[in-house]
Amino acid sequence: MKVVLIPGDGIGKEISESVRRVSEALGTGIEWDEFAAGAEYYDESGSLMQPGLVEAIEADGLALKGPTATPIGKGFRSINVQLRQRFNTYANFRPVHSRVGVKSRYDNVDLIVIRENTEDLYMGLEYKIGDDTAHGIKLITRQASERIARFAFEYAKKHGRHLVTCVHKANIMKYTDGLFLDAFNHVAADYPDIEHNSVIVDAMTMKLVTDPTQFDVIVAPNLYGDILSDLCSGLVGGLGFAPSANIGDNQVIYEAVHGSAPDIAGKDLANPSALLLALAMLLRDHDMEDKAKAIENAIDEVVRKGEHTTHDIGGNAGTKEFTDAVIAELGEVR
Image 1 (cartoon, rainbow, N blue to C red):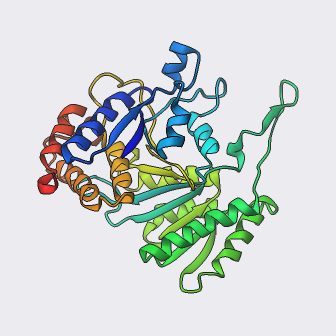
Image 2: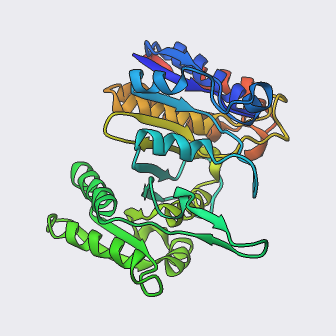
């Protein structure tokens, strides 16, 4: 199986090396097709992506991506957004699970956040009206809204989930979010055996931090989904344990959702767990459940024991030492 590997910026190269090592130790048979992309590559070459990257993703159908930096308030548009729009990976899939040994406010979180990934304000349809006014367009279509709602219900049906919650702001944005909510309710009628409800986005943030166990599968437009998925990651110990998948009809791009952390890049300090968990998602989706579970269990054991944990979770180990410990815990799956 060939998989495009995009290490990205900052700590991306270090955590990508962890992925290579764990994949090899597990005997996954993955052949990595590595390409550069991001701000660092742009500074070197004047291009955001190495030639051949797009074609490789088209051919292989699978990519694993580390963090890429995006300038704030200026410069180029997010590479993540560009790749999602280029390959129409319309569903951003974010599992949020409590992990053994990770200190957090809750120990029983089990959520799936599904975010529409191609439109809303993230389409970047904005322009300046003079020096002191800017205008952005929030684009919501019925086709994309029904497609993501159906994705959420199909996932719930396949995996025995009992509730799908639509997040919106239709009380204020009656046309755009109103359309998203209407599309959700229309699709929900096709799944009478699955409970569904809807929650206004600001109320949703309060409800999640008060009691996340009242939710199961959450589906939202692009912007709200982005914000809520990070909030949910905070319920289980932070972005260091937050993998995701960008899913389209023909391509899937798995990634760690945290940033490039340039302040610790090259210092052997990064926690590679999120990208390793993204690898586990990839393996699970390709009938390697035993290897996916081995990665998850190994990470949990390393964190639980606390002898080889990274600085972000209270330890003193570096990226390489943490990875060594994970490999030692992989067990008999190899």
